[in-house]
Image 1 (tube, rainbow, N blue to C red):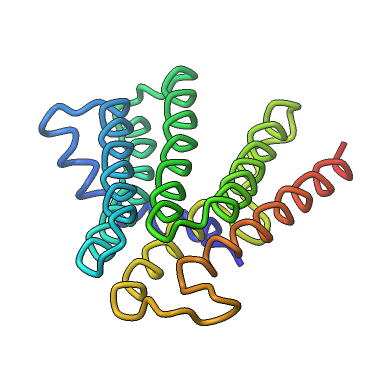
Image 2 (cartoon, rainbow, N blue to C red):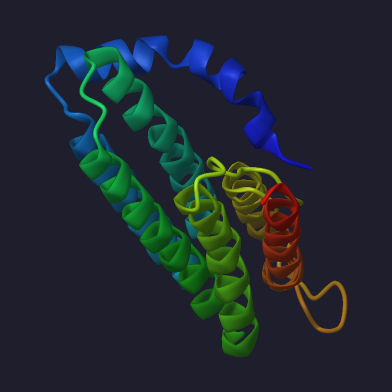
Length: 200
């Protein structure tokens, strides 16, 4: 399961957004910073843990994911792609991941589970960039890529707004999401590692 294989489809839908960003004079780096700000807003909303805030957080987290595509497309459109921009994008993406998962964690008070979830997510992303660093190429595959995580967080935000009662083992839908990220995040990291090891 990975939505990253549909990047080409998303790229075709980015045109109006890229043209609008270029028209108002935004740089790719500025879009990256705006995307991060939207992620922080999502985290703050999820931390409140109330239905209306869950919906607002869901909208923000999905917008963060979309803007994360816009910055790269804008850089290509303006022909200003750079290593510095790529670095900034990756750093802000990781901080955005941490912020949103922290928001979910605070909202339900499941700190140990949140820690396990964020380490799983960070290891998944780390393996993708480390594989690139050793010259194999950026790895987006695995059980859950960033696009999958963002989509799930958006969906869970909406579901949690309507139904926040415990479902399994005392965990509500947010707790189950964190458990999924904890388990599948580390499995995806291992999957990426093994694939890269074979390639090497």
